[in-house]
Each structure stands twice: as structure tokens, then as C-alpha cells.
Length: 228
Image (cartoon, rainbow, N blue to C red; front, side, top):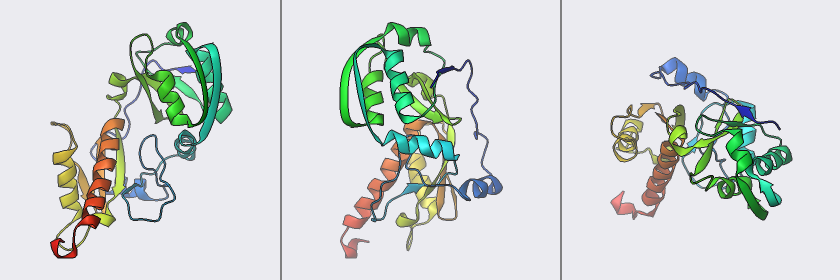
């Protein structure tokens, strides 16, 4: 798969959500845990992301959890990334702040087996000419760039918080907790719709949101009956 150099990046779904928009996002979407994660097959109650996304982006998210292997004893980073892209059939693009010339100059010497694609990418990108790179799924491709660039990329995500709801606990309460505990100061507040909470922010905040919500579920399950 060839690299695609992106000169600019459109921040999409960044306007204030309306009921119509949110309902459209909820209809027909496959559940994902986060920007770059896939819900596992466990049967226990947990918070899941239910944002509607394209089938291509669903496939990339699942592929990130797939097992991979890479033998690159003396390769450029560009070659190593192309090998993984070809192996898994995904498109990889570049965000502002990193160029293919930099990836050609960077050398890697790795032999990886029996690890997830997500982990393999983390190893390859952890130090590129003194800076840590990361990846984000967007526009049906996997884009690589500096963390500072990825932090600027906001997307709207919808979380099914039904496992947290009950007597005295509403989706509005959960949205308030997310706003106070997770969202950086000055961010748009999390909002509630039915049994869902809607958050608009970057990959890292979405990961923290999902982790926080599931921690609340686990803590609630661990409480003695008289404490609930």
C-alpha cells in the first residue's frame, strides 16, 4: 500500500451535536471501544462505544488487534511500515509534522512475532529522529503523525452507558462525571441522549473516557449491596 501525504486535515463532526445528528450516528454502527481498539468477546457488562463509522474504519480497528509478524533486520522505517500495510491490507497516510523523507532516513532493526499490529506500530514509532509518533484512524486509512498533531484531531463519539444507569443515576449524571474527571478544562461538555453520552475530543481523551467509564462500572459492581 502506498503512503498518502496529507497537507491538511479536515476536522470533521466538530459542530455541536443535535438530536438528529446523534440519532444518525447511532443507527447502524458497529461497536468500537475507541479510535484504535475493538471490543472483545467478553460477556460481562462494560461500556462500549457505538459511534457509527464506515466498514473500512471498522476493519482497520479490528486489524490493529490482529496478530502480526515483521522481520526487518536492516530496513528504513518507511519500508517496515509498508511491509505491515501490505501484510494487513490497510492504507497508511502521513499527517503534517512528519514526511516520508524522514521515514526513509530512519532505520529500524526489529524481528517481531506473535504481537498485535497495534503493539508493532508502537515499537516502530516510539522514537523517530528524537520524537515519538503515533497513529489515528480517519478517512478509511491509518494516519501517522506527531502526538501533538493527533491531539488536534477531534471527533465525536457516542458511548452506551446503560451499565452505569439505575436508581438515582442518569445519563446526565454520567456526562457530568466525564466532563469533570476526563475532559480538559475549556473543552465542550459531554452531553447525554437517552442512555448514551456524547463526547467530542481527540483520540487520547476518548481512550481516557472509555477507561474511566469502565472503571466506574467495575467499582459499582464491587460495592456491597447495601452501599448501592
